Length: 274
Image 1: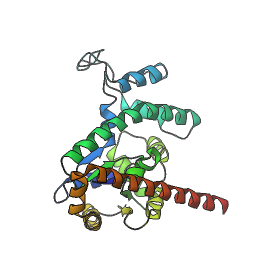
Image 2: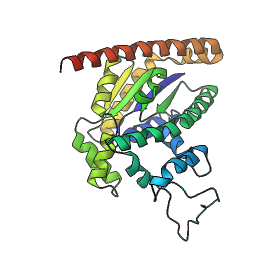
Image 3: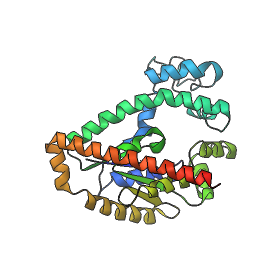
Image 4: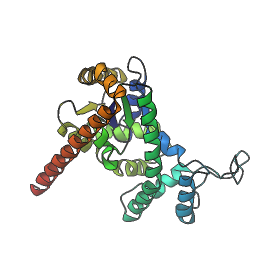
């Protein structure tokens, strides 16, 4: 089974690409780490309790306010849901304090999400899917690119388009809040460059500065090429002979380790030339 690592940056259209990949004629299973990240911090979970314990004392509005519809202990008695905008203001930004807070939050959420991803991968494998999409905003940063036979980056060439889409999507954000969210993630154009450096057949950049129709046409063309390089007969053999599937996965992982080494060398050379 082929792992397609899908990533991008905030408001570049990654979710739109994910929905297109999940719909006919592709109908690929999507493992969305954003959805998993929400589930693992629902009231009563280990993630929720850890976040409340660490951020509660310094973030008074960390939880959704008490109201007629929201009792003090939450709807099910496990606690009120997290106030995501308030938590976002606490962790997004470039100051050292916010970077540290973001690191703590990632340290709480990521391990729980990773467990959920592994479970979802096993389910997709058991159902005989030829490929599964790992929808991960921090694909490179969290190391999921090492498991991906193909990495797909959804990017925009114009930063102004990214800001415009973000503020249209989340009108409650001030321009400063929107900028903080953008700069808290790696520049998507750098992600695109890293993806292209993986080489033909291993990295696909989807430039999304145009319309949805143009975006869909690019995705359809890319999927045809990916499907051609991963024929159904090979996927069935890997499914029916698990040791062969494990060996194929190990080969992909080893290739990606070497790809990342080459990327580090490229980065070091570029820094040396500055």
